Amino acid sequence: MNRAGLLDGKVGMVTGAAQGLGEAIADLAAREGSRVVIADVRDELGEAVARRIGSEALYVHCDVSDGAQVEAAVNAAVQRFGRLDWLCNNAVGGAGGFAALVDIDEASWQRTVDVCMKGVFLGMKYAIPAMLAGGGGAIVNITTSGLFKGEAMLGAYVAAKGGVHALTMAAASEYAARGVRVNSVAPAGMETRAIQRYFEKFPEFRDKTIATHAMRRLGRPEEVAEPVVWLASDRASFVTGACLVCDGGNLVNSHLL
Image (cartoon, rainbow, N blue to C red):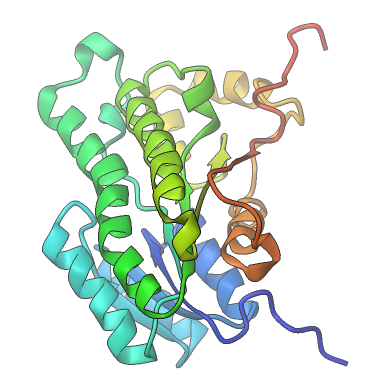
């Protein structure tokens, strides 16, 4: 007997899904039975992901810092698939240019906040009404375990993700009684292109970064996709306002071991 997928019959959207964690989330969601909208600004990569997943996927160009584009992406999901049941706000950009706080220029700071925090606000602003129209839904916002302890050279990114953590809890409080659950997943270091750029700028940080994880390795995108898909599913029906830390022991790592 075939196992029912966690997201059978559902429709979801993942921002920043052209590669990295977003792509892994879209892939897993599709395998778990969901139709998926891949939202990104990297058209060639995003269209390739949609083609690989198949007819149950749709690519839409979407700069998450632009409200009109986010609204259009949500509308495209509803027009193509008839509803929107879940959203993963994953898109990331800027990261403050990987610089010490005093060296972050204002434009880089603003771009990081616009994509990483404003983009989450806009995603929820336009997705929640669509979910309410369909009887409810689930939102999963990607934050970082670094918001709980700080991360060197990532001040803008960590600050923006701290805002996302607060927004997640506020939205969960507002919409729980109306059938929309809102949670977050907080990864640490993952083997993605983004962290490779960080290590290219600070090569001496690679071994040090790995050592901050109790498991003594970086995570794989598919390992973080698993809790995202679970939170988006009905298996997490009594979970809202939660932050699921998926960080390889980054927060519990001990210098003694």
